[in-house]
Image: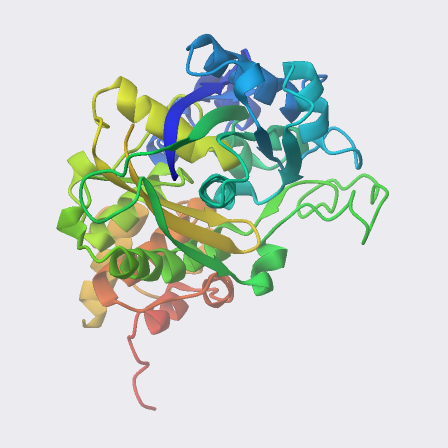
Length: 335
Length: 78
């Protein structure tokens, strides 16, 4: 049995925050400057009562509407989110019920932010190729805009809310060539990076609110040390690309398309140049939705397919990196 | 790279006109030294000089001269 991606869909909340509106909130940056610095024209913002589970549900329904599978076919649900509905029960259990998945389906949450999608593919492959499941629904969903401090101009420019639904299924045939439909994988973790991408309160270390903070850093709010995270990215991503190429026994030329976590356009372009990847092989797809954390890669895959940049049979490298610090990379054959 | 070349590289990184920087400016006084500038600076040093910098190292810089030291421009012997 071979695990392969069959379909990817995504959902963004209705409300849009444009660069013009951002410039009105932060007058020292013009709309043009924001676009030039970030590569982002707009980002979607969840409503006050709209949780990641709601976005994930909508993404899943879009996937079912493609006809690729029905809710009754799903035998395992994986939900990646940094913002579950409750401390317990798991959001995956809530979504099993809301989506009408069979009660014999397994379901659980995991949380790994921007690295979550690639880790999710690894989990799905493990479940399928050990014959524990056949149709795995992977939902990635985050609403980081809810955690932004009012003065955090940088993060508000970059981050957007959204969810993606990916169906990974077992199939009997293997793809042409020596690589599987999904794999190999490279993983990495560095907990020393914890303070550079963090929301401090709400967990067990500090359960209640820290109280109002006029400016950053604020323990109740999302904090990202941009320069440190950039340094981490520069340190880890090129090495990870080298490792996945070695594991896959191929070279840069043997990869048809590169889809990295869509952190921001500046970092992506810097990495592309550093790795010497031609522009036409490097997917950039964040101008309309910003950095949606765990959903940036599936959204980029969907958009690349829609614009014809991703075609069936392509060998695609996925590289995810972020909170933790954590990182992961894999190769996929495009559906 | 010698100091004038490093200054031109810094000007280009920060989107300043050529020959604007003398090398003794305080970063706090430069309008171009905003929150993205640190990222651009780290990227430039990585790309053109092959030197990996941490955010901490750059955060400690108070002047353009401090940036030049990170870029590899040693101060003149006393």
